[in-house]
Amino acid sequence: MSKILILHGPNLNLLGLREPEVYGVLTLDDINARLTALGAELQVEVRAFQSNGEGALIDALHEARTWASGVVFNPGAYTHTSVALRDAIAAIEIPVVEVHLSNVYAREAFRHQSLLAPVCLGKISGFGWESYALGLRALVSQFKR
Ligand code: DQA
Image 1 (spheres, protein in one colour):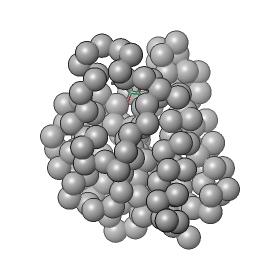
Image 2 (cartoon, rainbow, N blue to C red):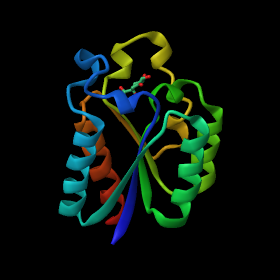
Image 3 (spheres, rainbow, N blue to C red):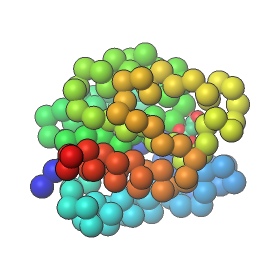
Image 4 (cartoon, helix red, strand yellow):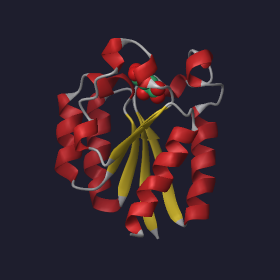
């Protein structure tokens, strides 16, 4: 069975409490539980990890190379700043889908730039927790092409 890493970046551990009008009321555990259920439906194993640290996210991407078929990644604010995460995604040579709960293009100008999108398979933004679900479906559909 294919395995997929669901990777959550900084401040996403506070989901449910953090700006619920922007990010919704579901907690990270709620989202992970929904993605685990969706994974079972799609016949893939889903493993989730969150870190606030750029280094830990890079390490998780490097490790994913050894066990995962792909990654659904919400890089949080590092999306807009991190050359190191971009290089990690380019290095691992497994597909990564960038996802965001909010529509980053409807927000501040600094959120319109993603340093990561050019090295990702694709990007989904603006559908709340379902951005992750759509990202997971899109990733799995690529394995079945
Ligand atoms: C986010 C969007 C980012 O701009 C922001 O820094 C986040 C969350 C989202 O899921 O909408 O932390 O990635």
